[in-house]
Image (tube, rainbow, N blue to C red; front, side, top):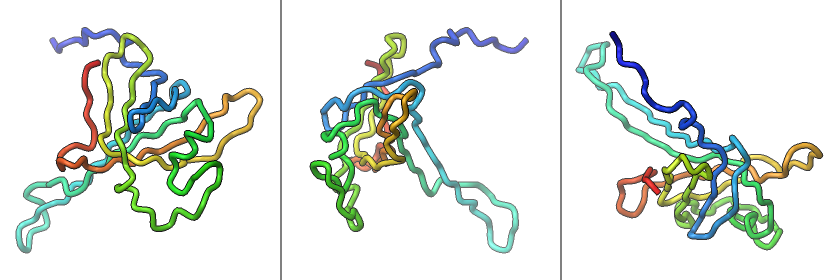
Length: 160
């Protein structure tokens, strides 16, 4: 007989989270808006003149966080590359890694005790700011992760 899952299905819901960027609390995400993306690209290794690969090795890995921040204010808008006091300039040429800071996601649900940390991440606007009567106003962000200064980590998950 196969093993049966013994966990609590209620524990798989993250829900809203508090967002900390560069040690400053940006506020909370809207419910069900956080998505941690990990993308890996393998490259097949084939012997000379053969068509079947001997193995695959990972040659690329990217990490990012998509979320909708519930607080749309000038201070949070100023996090976007090219933004300064409500004015947006052309961000072409900005080195995103050089301005990256630590991003922490802390789930608000007390049953979720994990903290997700991206040691180096830069926020980008992912969508517009909606002005709808029935939907909460939110700031849609995509945080692109970079390898930390030690050269090892894109993301760390730890217990609170």
